[in-house]
Amino acid sequence: MTDMHKPHRDTVFLEQAEVLAHECHAGEQYVLRVRAPQIAARARAGSFVHIQCDTQRPLRRPISIMRVDAQAGTVDFLYKVLGDGTRLLSSRCVGEQLSILGPIGTGFTAHADRPRALLMGGGVGMPPMVFLADELRRNDAFKPFVVLGSEVPFPFTPRPSQFMVPGVPAHVTAAMPLLEDWGVPSRLASRQGYAGCLDGFVTDLARAWLDTLSDAQRNEVEVFACGPHPMLDAVAKLARDYGLPCQISLEEFMACGIGGCAGCVVEVRTDSGPAMKRVCVDGPVFDATTVFPG
Image (cartoon, rainbow, N blue to C red; front, side, top):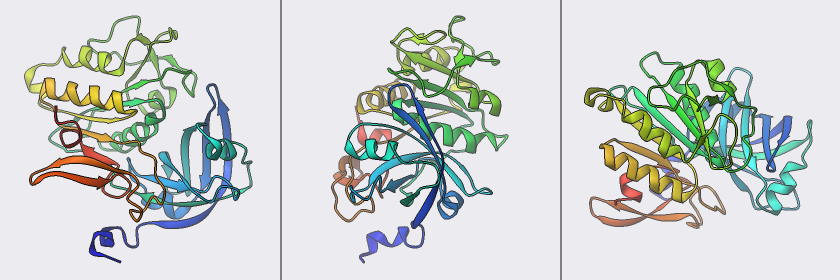
């Protein structure tokens, strides 16, 4: 094994995880809970796992982690059926075993001098934002605000928020119940006309909020995002417009998931020029300026 693999030694585990719950939601979206204590104890917001969806498909699928309970040893995922692998995964039942490799990848790093964390998730990019919000809410120094977007029905029943958010239009009240229960303000955006949601993009909501902040308050903001490529490009532009640090989690197809095949490389900007980085182990979280330099 070469030196580039050393940071990941003794941090990735292969577990036979028991399926504890498997819920189907509109738009062929599924919330899966498994018992995987080694992964639950070590996962951090932004990390992911490689799941063998079925013995018929030995090639694993990367899925972001949405929530962990280290004490109970459980891990939650949100995924959408996009092909044969995830369709086979969707048929797995409570009590069955899944082969899961993880946690993999470099996660998000929040900074105490930027306590106003702006979290933006789109589609199946929502799970890392939920995980990050869960981590940040446990530290009184941080004040996370979460904006989620979807062009299919959300995989939860939105409810009116109990929190006032400056700059957000009065009719935009829809929030994620789990975040509400945690005391974390959130708002939802979609172009599908869902009740209580902004008719637009997550970046529209973010701009409305940022425009209400003073210069001193904006200097306390750090942006975190996960979602499809066009959304991340727009988020990176938003961060540039306001001069904000921004971390993004990339979504890429992967074969091995542990850096060996180099099938998930992306070009990033470094001090010494362009370089190819592996999303699985060098990421999936990157500084937005290195991927979308503008």
